[in-house]
Amino acid sequence: MDTEIAEVICVKAGYRMVVSHNLAAMNAQRQYKLNTAAARKSTEKLSSGYKVNRAADDAAGLTISEKMRSMIRGLNQGAENIEDGISLCQIADGALAEVHDILQRMNELSVQAANDTNTAIDRQAIQNEMNELAVEITRIGKSTTYNTMHIFDDAGNMEEQGAVTALITSPSAEKGYLSEPVQIGGLWHPASTLDFSRIDSSNIEKLNGQGFSFNCSESCAEVFDFTFTTDGTPSSASNLSGKVHHYYNVDISGCTDGSQVVDRLFQYVSDNPPNGLSLVGDVLGVSHSNSMKKGPDGKSLIVYANQGMAMESAARTRYAGDGGPYGSGKIDCTRIMGHSGEMVNTFQIQCSSVQDDCEAIQTYRMNAEVLGVDRLSVMSHLDARGCIDRVNQALDKVSGYRTDLGASQNRLEHSYNNVNNTSENLQAAETQIRDADMAKEMVEHAKQNILMQAGQSMMAQANQSTQGILSLLQ
Image 1: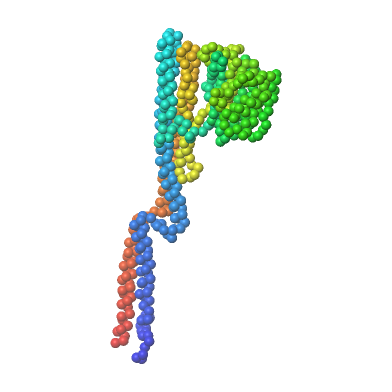
Image 2: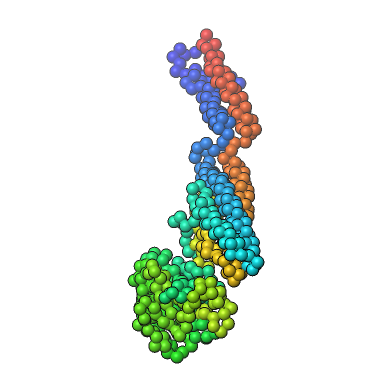
């Protein structure tokens, strides 16, 4: 046998032995590294509880999972928001329930005062209680809050519901009759006041195409119709002489507040008087039965019947729609009042992380003036009779407010159930993508541990396999 051997090879029974490379050990080492990496990942999954711990584990799955997590967390917060909204509804309804009780008492007092067995002292006692109850209604409207936010009071969040911001302030105007007395020249005249004090440059455009009209008297078919335009259409008037229906289109473009609107209207009618009537002092005659004048603040317009009375109560009751052929004019303010002239506060409840997924809770301005019970008089039989109707109207209005709140609360409760159900189902879907199956990973972990131990043993045996070559060199 040669003594200079670069590589000793022994071929015996088909087995090839080499010393330059230990292929068996190399293979065992490679497998050991793979098993170690797999065991490390299995340990990480068991430790975190997730089968996707990094984007490399499942790039597409990670994207879907994170999107679902965002939706789930948004839904969970939305559920809390909805609970807050339900609480707001409950507080508002509780306050209105107390107002309902007050109005029921006012109705009771009105019926009591309408009985002519009462003396003047009795009526005064009833009147005192009516006044105090009206004050309490206003106090409840101003003081009812949720999280320091006013629910019924105009605290900067309320907006006009309907087409325009101007209001007809008189409850009598809602009935369609001039029955809000004003004192002019020592006499009381049936009237209605159009209040433009809330008009400013931000909302004057809402007056475009809106207006009001009135009959010269209840028994007369002659109608005076006023329409505002803000698009630059020039003012115009038609049928001003001897015609049944008189039309005024008044351009108020460029006006920035209510006083300017009143000035523009008053000036144009003064320049174009119907039936040859004209301005006398601060009074503008518009028919043989009615006149106009500006309110003391310059931001309101008073439409009143020419016939005056010495007593305020007589002016109020004589022309409340039952004055026969001598009744005062009928006024139609539906176009300018929008939706009953109600101020609305809207609370938006965000229900999820979707931008437009909101529920709105609406509350209305509520005080004695809005309900029409701020100036109730029971000092005469006729006055007390009129109070009964006005209190009943206030009861209907508060019932409507409570109905809206109850409907909102029921809707929110259904939204709450739906949000929680959606969150639960999304969580179930997300766990299929992201969460580790612990039983499966335990099996995998045990498997990798066994393979690692086997790999270590095989590397040791592979290192021993070349020791047999030394026996050939002896």
